[in-house]
Length: 204
Length: 379
Image 1 (tube, rainbow over the protein chains, first blue to last red):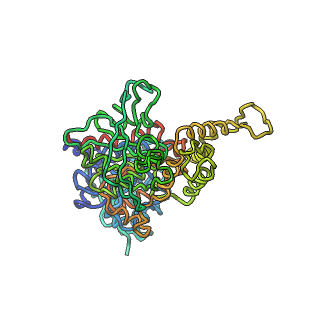
Image 2: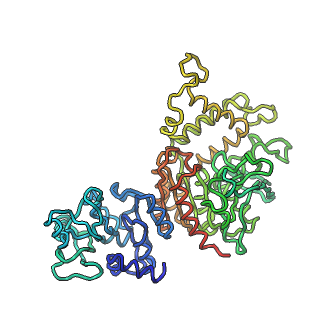
Image 3: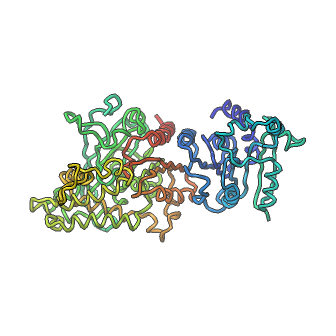
């Protein structure tokens, strides 16, 4: 991966840079639904992490291997039984939360396997999404690129929803970053942020 | 065969070893020969060598064909060759016939120089560890300190895994395909039935049938028929044969009626005509004994603690002999020991035999992995 590739990825996926900023050098990282392995490769290059990905899609498995990233072909929904308790510093679910069916069980598994969890997801409460629904259509955007009939997203949520979920499930949010494109959002994040990234751990 | 990307004409070589080999069982083989083939060029720092380990009925003729025998194509020719996933333009690839085999390496049908008779029943029972030891001596002879990769399917995958445990410094990558960390009781049971068929054949003569000028064809044939059932999936058999009848009607007798019977008997006869019964017994025992955790109180995590290689583990969805669940038993101790490991589960209808078949996802995975391995190799 060249310096240009890293810069391009950081621009295309602002959540990558946000995630990387939380991860110390040499950390052990598990990336769930790792796609073609871009995030893991980015973290390998920028943070020298010891990383593994979990992915189910055949083409993505080949891409991960070509990217020089460790990948385990498995269905996230069937749990993380291959991974031991506390075997990772961070377990990441990047832009995948909204497409998981057994979301509660998966968050629980993330915090069994990892010391901390990191999730990023498109904020359904973003004003453009709200406007779309208000005007009578399901939102379609760069963060939500699917039509209602072909979307893999079954559990879309807003920032508020996710934070309520965490409170109800004894999950402690450690840090949150909200973005609109590459820009950090601090004012009215549930309205003005298109993407959210959370770092959390098991509640005491 | 696609002639444009075959390695072309190949020939077998023979290596003689005069240092006694001490087997796990304690038996000693004073001297032995291994027959092998090589494809591609060994680079100047000898860092691009790949060892291919064969399965139960395999041998050294992995790729290409012999002069004057264009139909005699290597058993993994679809995988190994110029531009193929195991790319002979980049790697120096070695295939050998394992010790105890019946394709040219010293085995039960070879003449024991001490007695000037075939070894027969006197050939020592061999383990995967013994094979790895003998393969390392071949590597020494070829001047290979460290393999870029050791690759095998099924029993070959077990040898590849064992390489990372016996010689952690001598292998950078292990590709274990359609393999398992040990056989299950069901697997051992299948092997025992196969062995019983051979041992119970009156022509077996306690393993010394050579002197009687007979071959325990019936036993060997039954053993292969049973094995073959377990290598295919239920679905593959249903697709290929279903309940097809040879004559289109029931004949109410015990001759071949269903197509599957015809196929199995054909496979059994073909195999019994060339394979050595003693080798079959040895191979199945090597499978049964393989269990790296055995020396660590059953703890596979401890068994793999010494491994230094990176791993690619591949399984096939319809393989019920070495199922995906068994492959994940290999992956887990590797994760525990923080090895670099990738695992691909290939959707395939061909059962255990899938590892021999050309399938896009499978070949793409192996190609992508080995392309990266070739980039690490020196000049």
